[in-house]
Length: 310
Length: 295
Image (cartoon, rainbow over all chains, first blue to last red; front, side, top):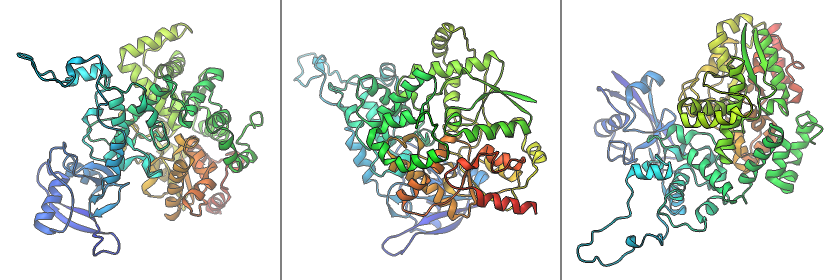
């Protein structure tokens, strides 16, 4: 079968603006989108640029938008895409500037990963043998490593360590679309992974305190796109929600996001219902109320705010 | 006649009363018996597990048990209620420990849940239980020539492991419904994206820019009206539309209808009975265009 690949093209050195170019490709059984792109590059147009490496869905290099959704090109088969969309439309990932064609600038993504300190903090005092020391005669090296199943049992966290940093979640994240400074799902999944690790020596809860600052975990819009489109089956949003619960239970509730959830729980506890006006007041306080006054006034005029609450 | 335990959710009973009324109007026309659930509580607004996961299980387990007691499936008209109830249902069906824990709590109030209830959103209940052909037969007004932008929202589609109504990558249920009513579905990228409602009180700028961009795109594609199956999306898109316009620095003026209001109009409802006066952006231009079809 011959099918069409419609590729986003943009070389900032020579192009004024992006454009799309179509290529006709002959398929073979089991052909992936990455196979198709490599065929185009070697046989039709050597200037088409994209990242790729392992071809086994483990390096995360070939993430791109395929028919509008962020996917790994090496893990996506041509046939089902053609059946559903009739074409292979490839574009660079969203939420990051384009370097050239399907290649995006990853700096902002990795800066955010670094920001959550994706490594174990300090060393636990109770684990003397883990401390660096010269080996005595006959002593074996004991590495502070948990087997995957052991880690899962200890933390209930069986997915976030599988992250390959492919940026599919970051590209689909509603929170990042609305706020370029938002940490995003991958960084927050990392934060969750380390905040749950029993080897981590975060005595004063600094991980959750830092994660609660503006642009952090309370800015998640719960759009579920990170879970839906992760090629490795990870659910960053579930990790984020678990961090919310842990933060509130540890009284890390200075953010308006935490106040919002506490107020909803309180409202349900008191009346069984969600009292919209009360929750709005509890979350934003006086400032929030004043900011929203024109909108609230308009809504009140339309009968949207019940008179007993206004 | 088909019966459901009717779970309108909190917003449709307070700021979005017009949605509740339109749903009842549509149900009557389509011979759907909506059995009220006066004892049901809030689902937790999609964020309650961030407070306490057990609370989410118990309050929604209770709602499911109330429906099961009546031998009914639950009909929802809110995306977030649909997802939250479905998530809890999945968990109670697949996780014995969660079910036992929930039933221990339910036993104290004389209830028990065994996992028999199904959650259906009105959009897909009409598709699967009534049929778009039947809907078409009952329509008295055509929406011919009206460009309708369907705004799915998130929680009716994602995660598809829990809400399994439609194809998450390219859903068509909403478009099929619009076509059945004679309308022209507007194709635009942000139809399945987020409206930002969940953080509207936490980070208004993020939220309203999401809503604003979706409205702007639909407007640019020539939409006369945008329709949503979720009252939370409606708040973001309609009530906050002026704020959204400011946050993306564009001029926005797109009427936003609730899904049952659109169906209601086709089934003979008018401006007043659909409660359009409660909307921020006027639907009069759309209604005028629909009236032209009758002449």
